[in-house]
Image (cartoon, rainbow, N blue to C red):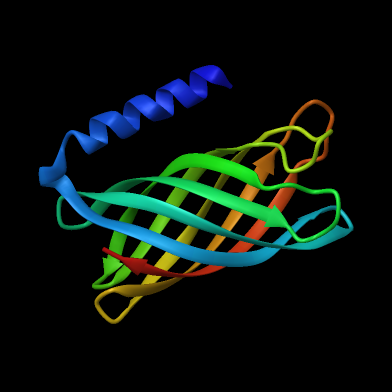
Length: 155
């Protein structure tokens, strides 16, 4: 886990040192559902990130998040990761993502999430998005899935 965090910090530092490639910063509110097997719960959170253009069609980005399962005995799960994608239409981004999520319960395990999403501009500064993640939990704990929708602003 420490290696993953140090690696992510190194990527963020390199990305911050290349402002000529900067595309946009973003902040969003998001909510959805998390499930494993027959159990499902609502979740809500926030995320902030920065996307970098790699030409006219491609981009990469870094992101941090804080999400909470909306039940008793859960806590905020902090996440850090990135995404890589393509601009499929003006104002539309499709992307794959990967991140690390801290434990969301005292006795749970942290997880690695992999998935994808689509982000659509609404005007010049705002966007909506939909995202799916499969959370690989490990240690004989069942994996989980998460679907999120978000509303955000770009800077």
